[in-house]
Structure formats: C-alpha cells, structure tokens
Length: 230
Picture 1 (cartoon, rainbow, N blue to C red):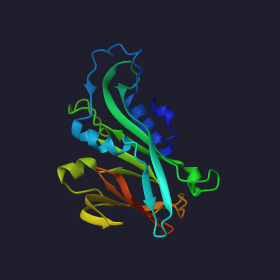
Picture 2: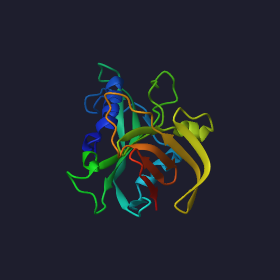
Picture 3: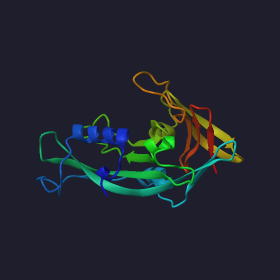
Picture 4: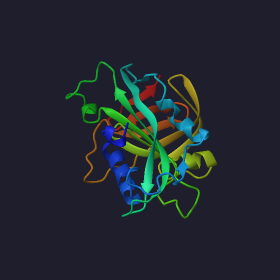
C-alpha cells in the first residue's frame, strides 16, 4: 500500500507538498538507507488510529432516523523515507497511518447523492519525525488529519494530551450526551466561515465532535442536519 493508493485530494496534496519540501528519497537510490534512523509511533500515539482499524461500521442517524453508514477500509501503517533536498541521502524514516471511510448505506447513489463528489472520507496520521531539533522540520509534528463531509481539519492531539490551550476553532467538552450516549473529553471543532473562491454546500460539515476512542461521534451540516453516531 502506498499513499498514491488513495484519492486523497486536499490531504494528499498536503502530504505531497510536505514530502516534497522534505526532499523525499527512494530507498534504492539512497547511499545511507541502512544507517538512517527510524522513528516509530509510540503505543500512546497508536491509540488515535485504533478506531480506523476496527471492522465496525460507523452508523449515524439524523432526527428523522435516516442512516448513513461508513466502513473503515485499507487502514494500515507504513514507513516513508525523508531525505535532504536535491540529495540521495536519507535523513530518517518516519511512520505514518492512513485509512478511508467508505459510504456503504443503501441511500448512497453514485452520481446523484452529494457525497458522490467525495465518496471516501479520509483519515491520516503523520508522526513527529525526531526529537532532535537539528533534524526535525517545523511541519513535522504528530498530526491527525481528517477529511470529513467536505471539511478538512487536524485534530490538536499534542495540545489535548498535554492539557494546553487548543487552537482556534477547537473546544474541549469534559462530558456531553448525544443520542442517549454519554461521552467524556470530546473535542468540538467549528469550521471557519468559507470565503471566496470556496463554494459552500448544504452537506458541508460546519461542526464536528471527535473522541480519541471512537473518532467522529457527531457532525452538523450547513444545511441544518445533525448526524449522531450510534
């Protein structure tokens, strides 16, 4: 599995730009592929990817009990090499995780449903490459990104774990109940108001609720619909 396996659109573009800026090198062309350090996820970091490794279908319902179903697919860890710009030398290897969430409900109609333009919901985790400031670049932090219902956001994992201030648009809810289920430590994200040339749609997610254990548990659309995780 490679990153090119996924039609990742904006998140893929972000990843490609990140890797291009870092000077991505192939293993076979590198002179120091065997001596370069390898940076792996910690067990604590891997927990954030766990919801996307389970075979469970994510079921959401709105107020009229309509359902949407999303199946996590192709989730997996892989290692990528990061090299010096204009050089075959590899600085280090870093681990990454990526998965897709595929609409599987019977109401989804390719070519008719608005989601046809974005049938797969993307999840990616990028790991901090190194604790060595001489190697670590400014954009290499532990990042968890999700492309959900036409909205892209990055969960502030490091701030959440450290108990520090969250970035703009984020709020921590110690406890909240949705559709009869009570959740602890819920991250609420409110998307910024779109500006031209963006074209808002009724199915854009304007607010998303996220937990470490389950991933997305609720989202509200611009058109007024709210979908709660079962």
